[in-house]
Length: 91
Image 1 (cartoon, rainbow, N blue to C red):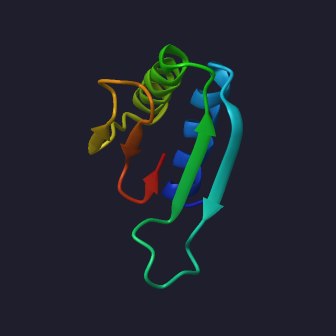
Image 2: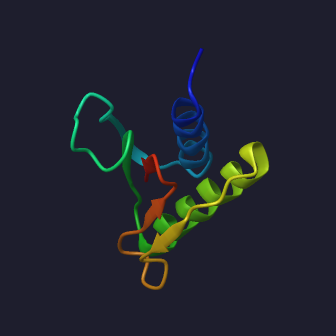
């Protein structure tokens, strides 16, 4: 049975795919004793607007599907890079 981190990863990736994110990579860090999270998910967008739209889609999907919002959001102001921190999963 998948744990909550595994389910959150699936929903985050669905949110990324919903907005046609490029080059999605999910890194499982569970076996690394000093890792600050269980998973780190990275993707690319084609423009600042696209990157912001991907982040908005991820937030929408996690809120709708899991009633879960990121603890912290960084980079939304410029859209060059955006970090969404869900605790055990960082995107």
